Image: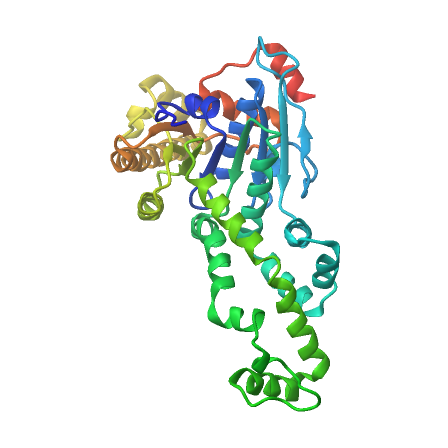
Length: 397
């Protein structure tokens, strides 16, 4: 069923099943993802926040000592009218185990499963593949989506370049399994098998195997051959999962949320990412412009910062206070200039997104978000919600 375009961040949180937070590094993407998950949970939606950001900020943002490869419950105060309904879970990829779990799920029988898991070649290959956050994120997304345990999944991706890798990862793995060289190993003809008796057959494949045998020995060749023959039984599972993940990302229940900052250095990168989403036909729900500097005063001289009575008072108490006055005035000018630059960036980003999605703005917070109380403060800024004194007390416990 097709869903209408979202008109606000609140609409996005209440109507979608998957929100993928993407953007450059250093713009508060992880904390925004956590705050969105918090808001959905407070509205009674069963919510899961997954991070594939190796910086590991999600645990801090949620006030947890650590999170891992399984869902960890986060205690959050429910919104009025939803008492007892709030349910928020969080997890962060543990790439050491995800790939083994994937093999267990896609292998057709126990014998094949053990043959792959115990194969030395597999252990080396899995170690290399599992270091790719993007492959493992696609697998976790597949599993969480199909479990249907959550009303909303919020996926926090790595900084922009790696996020683009995440979008391509399922298809790249499928293409890898379709390459001729892999099919050559996985479906060797009789003339290409390693040995007939004690002699190598002189086919192209046999020549390659013979060269490998000289370098690594016959036991290595046996395990290599066994690895690819075993993998043949699970390639259809990989391809099927790749197709499903692609469908999930393009589902009408999925929206991408671009989290960005108004700094001039990041504007071109943000534009590039919007183009990439459009090229891949992925739905952009909207944009959160975070870390917006605000200063309503526009000082040009000390007289515009302090009135005549203040200036006279400073001068009466001595030179140290005069220096303090001058430093304070300069700080205000610096803040105002940062505000002007931030304002120009905001206008550029608004023009950039045009009518393709909503825009939500968050001013720069004075303190970093490192607990649920901090998330609730960010929640107020994102959704315009004001916490009651009871909610504030609950969050601080």
